[in-house]
Amino acid sequence: MAAGGSSGARDAAESEPAGMRTVQRAIDVLGLFDDVRPALSLREIVSASGLPKTTVLRLLQTLRLNGLLWVDEHGRYLAGPALLRWSRLAEQAWRLPPAARALLRDLAAEHKETVHLYVRRDTHRVCIAQEEGPQALRQVVRVGDELPLWAGGVAKALLLDAPDGLLLRVAEASPYGAAHLVTLRTWIEEARDHGYAVSHGEREEGLSAVAVPVRGRSGAVLAALSFGGPSTRFTPERVTRFAAALRGAAGELARAGLPFEA
Image (tube, rainbow, N blue to C red; front, side):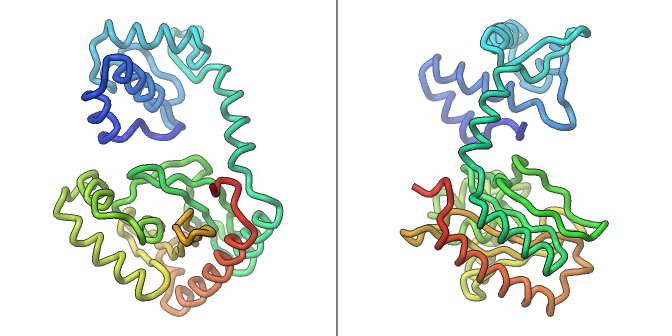
């Protein structure tokens, strides 16, 4: 599961009626579980959530009753069986058509780098498809992984048409605070001028990415298509080739249509 709900969502929920706050808190509790921590004890959930123990117990009971959480033989909480149904529904809803999958496979095979397709979720980006390159040393991002938008080539591509309000929230969620807004605007303007976005070690040292927007019929940015991998392989010459290949593929994806386009 991806990281917990954004601080903006939690802040907004605090100003809503009690029922809305309860829903947000339940979502935040589910968001504590991930690949690193697939099972959590009551104490760990209380500590990580920052909520009173009595509140956590009520939330856990409700989530258990609805099958969203389960308790193992050691008393630890883990993802419940009801999520299997939601996982299947999500996989069906976000599955790329065969032609789009083939396009990603061809890109990865020809350029020998891992290809990712991302969409924006509020101030985060979510990987919805990937095709791994043949290189032994490669960027590891799994489908469903959620990453921040304050840095990276993909972030710049997704934020090309973002309004100032969204950019400010992204900046405020970064380690640099609201002052990062100036940098974001500069990055986005550069990406707009070049027709693609590139990053070298912005979010994680030693990793680079080249990304382009995938636009829908209305012209709005729907997704971002990218190559990602070790910076040592992302030379200026290869970056230029990557960008050209990605732009062509993004156009084909747009013409073929994406399953999540309205």
